[in-house]
Length: 502
Ligand code: ADP
Image (cartoon, rainbow, N blue to C red; front, side, top):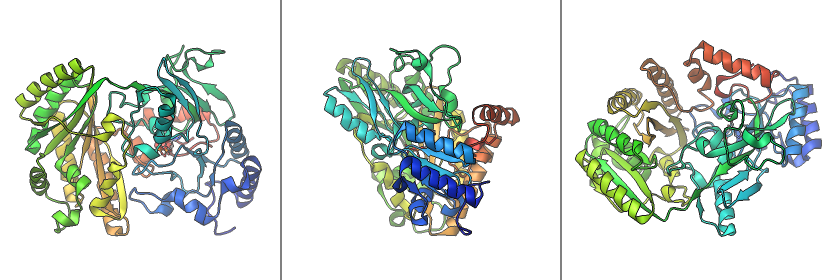
């Protein structure tokens, strides 16, 4: 067993004993330790070698009883476990682990929808439930509810995405804000429910998020304090009408007036959803291959990307949003949005389509992988206040860094009411190690430069968690560590997640 990867701090004998006990708990076929079975769990798109974040094994329980048994074994033998729901957090680490050798706790087999309330529009799901499964389930009920899902929609899970505080593009786009009630297993075997889930025969677990006393849901997102085994989720009643619009602007400097205009429309509720603002680079990458449009060295020049977009009838900035509601409301909002966007220099395409904004599951977001080819992608996601001047400052800083590293500048922005999440895919060919190193250096510099300019990140991948965590101050690191020590004193759950360790 000498050449076998071990969990950090675990002896070969303890690891053998762990695997054997897990086989007894979940069945031998659900304990993956042969290299060919473990490799897929360590396969990443982020700019690191697979081996850097490779787990030593994966355990696949199918019920809460089995999860409890595995956690008890892990606690006894001090084997760290990295819980994943569907493990498709692609570009943020997929199902890989922060500390090499950590065992993946793959919860895909826990895929039950345990509650549905058609009057309140709520469901309760287990970790392995995908958006596709949930949508198919809703169809069988005969009720008309919509889901909000992230880019890779069909194949990922509401729990995984919500715990990462992911976003979609409908009025329910802030996934954490539309979750209601977690069931959480702690490393000592305690199973508890947040919100009003602790009340005997609770009637309101999925109706009221805050419960009584401290609201704890947030501490289980982007963290490693517990394993979420169930989650309540609010469903959006299908709107009576909707209209998708693309507003585009010709020049990169238009970011200032467009941001200030969209902020007003978001704050007064004319536009109820984040939609997506894409620069020319990301729109081009979604439809073409780089080699077709640019064969020079380094990043595609911005002017060239903008010129290509003009040929497609689009601009340097392209904001795709949908208006929802009764037909008269949609019409009134459209007239209002049109007047204000046109006054801010936009050209409007009034009858556009974006599947993700109207409850149609699609895998179109994977088209980004075709731009360069070779499977490399990592998301760099700084947050900007919804102020034109801040957006311009952040995006120009970002572009100066991507240009310097020869990385194509792409950004897809989620427009909140007061904050914009500028999510930048850095794509590359994983077979080209020099390109991968450039993307890694670019990301590292971006994180530091953003922090130096007063901007933080919305989310990051397992390869950069320590760096991002270190930029939030010692007090912040310490408080997370104190909570970790209280809830998981042996550090069994996901060591290194968000830079948190005992
Ligand atoms: P996706 O839905 O995109 O496939 P993942 O299952 O990959 O999401 O989850 C993303 C990350 O969220 C994981 O790497 C892990 O850190 C955390 N996570 C996912 N599911 C759970 C869970 N049930 N309990 C605790 N943390 C989780």
